[in-house]
Length: 263
Image (cartoon, rainbow, N blue to C red):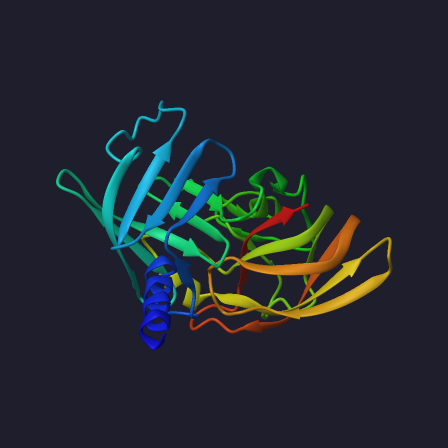
């Protein structure tokens, strides 16, 4: 009887093996798949450190990547993950933003190579239609505007434009959702140091304008996606206000990378 129980436990450990990442305790159960938000692409993590990039449309120009299987490893420099993949024909390192349910990958372009979710209907995910910021940083010919929050492109955060750390500055947007997915800080592939050099949101106030409701949340000091799940679906305007920040090592500018909603 004891041998039978031990055998069952061993088999369960094999079936539900996880890959523990070196930061924030995030785990990838194997096998686990992430489905892309805007296409038929899918990424699946398998046992023995195997990963498959699938594209059911089969029309992607990156044919060296899609519909192939690779060995993979995950490294971190303390803030950002690097997904390293290789097979007999190809080897690449991809910038990766990851949480328990969301995965974003970047290749050579500043636009995401992939944004997917696990165990979530990706048709329920969407960007807010507009953002109105109380202030925006103008730096030569670059404007770090509130509308940047509608994209996961690299090097395009919203940055408040007042002196100091931006406490009290805000962005307003409309929601019809039960969940807010926040990407904090300045995210850059070739200049990852900008995340730590600039300030990031720490404490925020969410004001639901129609419900006249305030809720305060603490954010983690990470570029990886983090979720705020409400008790119900709100359909109204919301104002996100900076209350406190993680201070930048070099700059006082406070940055927010992106906001996504889940109905």
